[in-house]
Amino acid sequence: MIELFGYQPETWLPFVFAGLMGASILLYVILDGYDLGVGILTPLAGDDGERDMMVASIGPFWDANETWLVLAVGLLLVAFPAAHGLILTTLYLPVFVMLIGLILRGVSFEFRVKARAKYKALWNRLFFAGSLMTALSQGFMLGLYVMGLEFTLGTFLFAVLCALALTMGYAFIGATWLILKGEGALQRRAVRWAKECIWGLAVGIAAISLASPLVSPRIWEKWFAFPDVLWLLPLPVVSLALLALLWRSFAHLPAEGDRWAWAPFTAALGLFTLAFAGLAYSFFPYVVPERLTIFEAASAPESLLIILVGACFVVPSILGYTALAYWVFRGKARGLRYD
Image 1 (cartoon, helix red, strand yellow):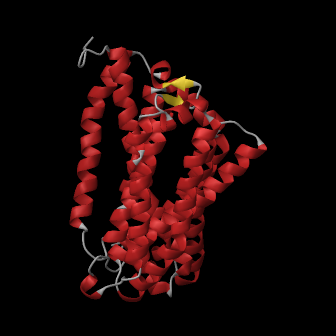
Image 2 (cartoon, helix red, strand yellow):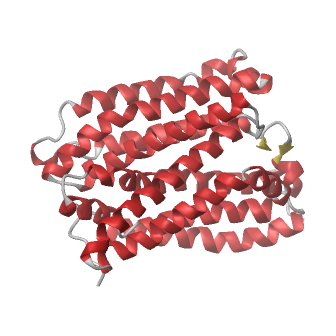
């Protein structure tokens, strides 16, 4: 077997797959997060034309965005099968709700324009419901994961708080996307939505940042032992600076000539990335909190090596067509067309 930088395959292969899975989850949360957020915001549109424009802004991207979820779950299944069984068995019901939500979103996205006019309102409501169910279930799963996949009244309430916070966080990043892609009344409305939803993201980040070290002495030690705390200080400081920058930028948006329309979405990407980096640092090397490390849960090195060969083709392909889609459909959103 192949050594890498002096590390045995039993060490570096699980690390590589944990990195791939983490990158897939982060890209999914950011990319599908904003299009779920747009779905959650659709009932607040000024009229049906504005709602169509909101859906049009995510039209070329939403199905490619969901590919990262498929890749992350696939990597968990093939690279860490023991963890896959434990996590998905524990989270069976929220996963079921999430899948129903994703199906509702996909079906209603296609049918809301092609169906007869009298049924369009129904498909609009189902599109909103599917987006809401998906966001709530993902937040609930995140909360239970942080609590070590334990079911008690306290962990249930924390998971509910995370469900609400992540839903508001998705609505916030969805609003920043509409600031970037929208114009006129839609852009002005998106600025107001972003200001009203930013608290959800802030509450979610604060709740998880406080709860993680409190429920795990190991995580407490990783964050607050000296001198590590000094190296980690930029994470919360930069996050607070981005929140302050966002709040200040909202006072000047929309601006003439569409100046700074990109700033809120870019800052939102930074906040989501920093929050995810903090979460990954807290739980590494565990894939199931405090129970199973990536090294204990990993498949045999021989299997991982074969899977890695396939991943070397699949991951660049997904990155390539995602980048191509964003390049081809850059600029402001245009009218929704399905032909």
